[in-house]
Image (tube, rainbow, N blue to C red; front, side, top):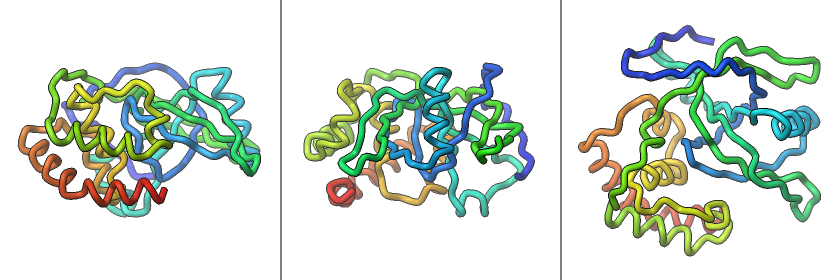
Length: 216
């Protein structure tokens, strides 16, 4: 793994926790929810450990991100808690997980079952700051995506459609763009100019997102 250094504007909070790690190409920001299907024995063990402990880390794994790592990059993941258990029609365990913080992952080890563990520290992220300001068409379009896609809508019984950061975070998660592009929004503060660019990107992609999620 490449070495890394923290930028001076990245706020860290040490929590002294060692958590199970689930390497997965899933991008989830604080407040984001997703459904995972668990069938490998080591990850069934992970769920058992997480449900009686502090949760686990969904560690974003993507070749493009690894190929583009620099000395200022860091291994990060989404610290999630399990909020619902279910069973699919095929009998496979399904869990809904909610991201409560982004974390830096260090000192990664694995047990005899090849289940990974790592020491984590929380990263302060802009999406955790509530901003009671509606973003016009972005909020309306996101509400439409929810209303037209039951599986996604069911994951969010309480939506923050009046919170501009919540809306931006959900759009970044669901847009079908490359993970290495989404990765750029992890360790940056979103400026007004970036928000305008996001606004244009999201609105231009709205119909495609609808099509993508319907067939997800």
